[in-house]
Structures are given as structure tokens and as C-alpha cells.
Image 1 (spheres, rainbow, N blue to C red):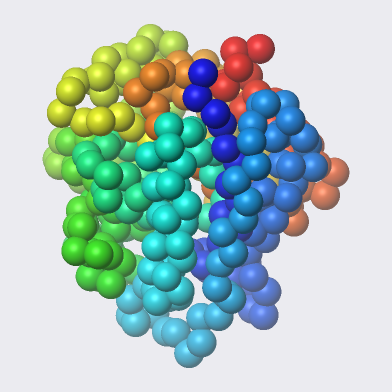
Image 2: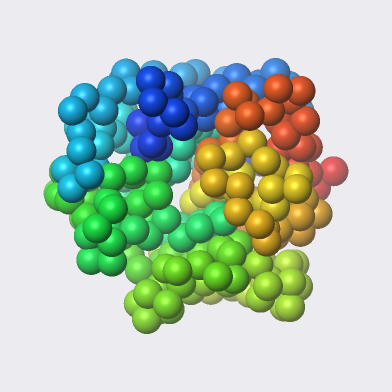
Length: 298
């Protein structure tokens, strides 16, 4: 059995502020999951915290590119150092975000080592980039585009390693049936499945099919990125974009479990859950239960 190592990555640098003068609350995600005794429930080891730079968009205006870009680049390298260390040691990093931009740190770490796949379980594709939008700015909605080399060079080409993930090594699962970016993913031959298709095919069957496509020897393994907004807002309202039509907890557990328990899976991150929007901790408890089920099968 590989050692699970929990690492806190409490960065909110990739999200727009919920209100003027405030900052996104997803930086509290790791603390809320630890309060649910997630580390103990997973039988995991302590991996510490990778402390992010201060959230400060300065004088950023629409059209200026990605805000907090320098801070995100710096943080991605720091997080990559931690993730790389554990993957090379044979550990399984469980990274608690943070917003979705933390995925850049994981992808950079794996790119340093070799060629790895990426399974994105997310309510949206997060594939906004200058080629398809004039509202580029929040890396949390652009991290898949950035990881595959689309966007400004100071984020897409860290250490000269662009792209961190090849298009053909990406699998996107759980996007809404009405996702605007889906057509582009399909045109680029980035495998994707909407919530409706997952239900039509069956979650366990789809997870098995995705695993088979990732077991080819061209890659050395894969990472799983989970955004809490893949869940329907009826059960997971504590996210910045609670869009209807998401997966239900049993569906997500059935999809996530086979992926995380695969010998080819080398790490995992959770993002976007915002404890500020979950005053009674109900959503934190749900996520902790889901992860325990997915990792242990119990």
C-alpha cells in the first residue's frame, strides 16, 4: 500500500473576489476537511502546508491577462516541489486546496518527472483562454487551458516545460450538459463526458472505460483533479459557481473510487469548496465522507 500524504494548498489566488474588498473563502477548505478528521479517516500521513502569497489583485483591470499571475507562478513552483518529492518517494499526495489553479502545481511536478495523464472531475471544463474568450483573468477558470499550454507564457511555460499535460492525456468528466467549452474539447480530441452521459453509460462503467484508456504505457500514470462544484448545488451549495445539473454524491463516489484506487493513479487534489458558504459544516462532512469512501471503499 502506498502512503497517503495530506498536503494543504490553501491558495485562493485564481478566483475573483465574491464582493469588493473581500477574498474567496476556499483557502479555508483544508482546515474544514481536517476538522472532519479526514487525515485520520484516511490513515494518511502529514504533509504540511504550502503557504501561498497574499491575495492582492492590485490595479488589475479586464484585459490585463490573468490576475495574480506572478504569485500563481511562484506558488505553482513551490507546490510542485512538494508534490514532486512525494511522488518520487512513492507516496500518494492528497492535496487540499484552494481554488483550481493549484492543479498547475501538480501538473508541473509530474511534467518534471515524465509524461502523465490528468483526470478532471469538474462541473466546468475550466478551458477559458485568449483564443476563445475576451474575459481571461481568473486562473481558477482557466487552469486546464493553462496546463495544456494555452494562455500567457509566464503561466503556461514554467521552467520551459510547456505543456505540462498533452491534450490526448486529459479526461474531463462531470461537466454540465450545456457547457459552452465542450465543443472545443471535442474538436481537440480531449475526451469528455457530461453528467447526462455519465448517467446514460453508468458511473462505474465509465470509470472503468476511462481507466482502460489511461493504462496504455505511453504515460507513467495519472493525477485526479476534483472540483467540488461537480456536485449538484442541492447537495453542494458551498462553491463559487453552484450550477444546476450536477452529480449526486453516490454517483461521484462510484466514479471517483475506481480512479483513486487504481495503481496508475499517483495523486489527487480537491478544490473550490468554500467553508464561508457552509456555516454548519454539512458540505465539509459530505466531502469527507465521499473521500473516505472513494479511497477506502468503505
